[in-house]
Image 1 (cartoon, rainbow, N blue to C red):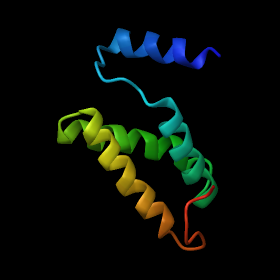
Image 2 (image 1 turned 120 degrees about the vertical axis):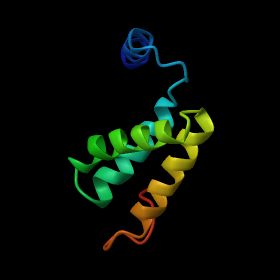
Image 3 (image 1 turned 135 degrees about the vertical axis):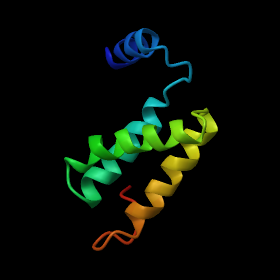
Image 4 (image 1 turned 90 degrees about the vertical axis):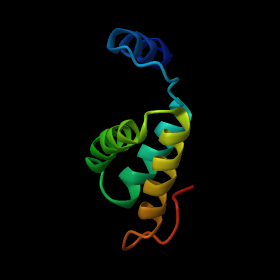
Length: 84
């Protein structure tokens, strides 16, 4: 898989010091895409990163913001729960 190498390459070039939880990020964007619509996934991923950065940018900040977004997804009309 080339995604981990690509992610590390971009992260290092941009000076991002936190590790990227690829599985968690991909799971979240999958849930968002299925619950809302596909274009919402990358936009929401950007918003998660931006909001986490505003809080300080730690891995904990990322996890907390992601958890909050998944709560919003679960409450989005027509979903009622996370997509398995």
